[in-house]
Image: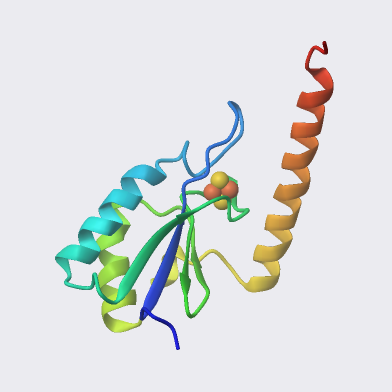
Length: 131
Ligand code: FES
């Protein structure tokens, strides 16, 4: 049994300059708004909010994933937070317009982003002065 009715992981990943990330897209404000709204709604004992590293959808941040359903949200803005808390956490109705996509597409996108990021880091390391 889950200790909380919902567990939300909010990506707060930072990346090197020039790389898209949830951090560069304003995740800190979304995280603050989410924590405040969960508290205002009186759901602090039912909704656990946790930060996490990259979920792999970096171009579409801020991203978050909600368990136990495994619902992924992308491009979440501060203005969306009250609706997520009210509809999803309050009424168990995920906010359809913010859903990231189906599981197969999500995995493909995350894997491609991982491949590109690792290639970027390898190129950066190769270009770094030695010695
Ligand atoms: S930086 Fe948030 S999903 Fe990659």
